[in-house]
Length: 355
Ligand SMILES: [Zn+2]
Ligand SMILES: [Zn+2]
Image (cartoon, rainbow, N blue to C red; front, top):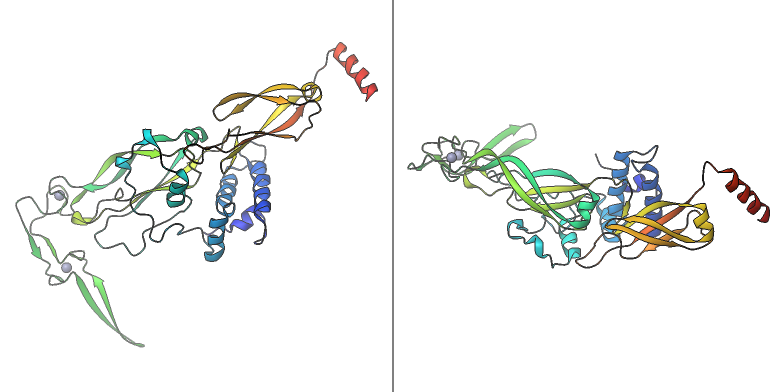
């Protein structure tokens, strides 16, 4: 099912980036799962829509093709081999990586599929916002077809060879001619017996019955870069299922979903939170402690602060490059005491007379 991102955010197609941002903030606020009347599914949908429409480049692509699929370079990015990836030593520009690997979905390598290529595997993993902030190495277990060790993927019992396929005479394909009311149609199909290879093992390997692959659980250490966005895709070439009889492996596509946070809302690299400030501090000025994604900081509240006032904690947001971070915006709401002592009430009555 295709969603219309403009409908989801409730903005017209010609809305400005500012209008898109405003609509997103409003809706994310309203449907945040921790709020009464919140809706997690809707919240995720809103975030997904904003990841496309909030980014002018992705939005232009979406407008042109009417789909969020097939973003990025045609046919998907070249293989990114995580096995040699030294995660303790990140010195690349995350921006580039993000453009290449994240923000798209369903990037199946078009035209690359062959009869022997292994299937692509798509999995979704869920991480916390804190994990997305720091980056992490996630251990995942995948049940998938891996190379058979007995025949080394060949499919033939060790010590035996291969013979020409009798079904296709070694051609690997079969021609089918069909006579219909509209004329004669000729179709070429991959031979189902040898799967296009033209030959098959003289004697099938005992472990894999000639497939060259067996189902096993494989453990993968997946480095997730700091700053990844919800819906971001990590594509690892060759980590999908093993191909038939030594054919190329499919790709592994991991979609990273970030759990909604109880305190922070995220908008790209910026974070937003709300904090209740006692009305006395709001009136007189003072200091409150604010929880940020990496610890608590003191926030100065100037005298005469009103509800809805927004304060910026520069550089306290999410990372968006190896050394840069977005900002954290704190919205103030004024807290009024429910119970007052007789003395406090008297004092307030005196003030009320003054105002
Ligand atoms: Zn085997
Ligand atoms: Zn054949």
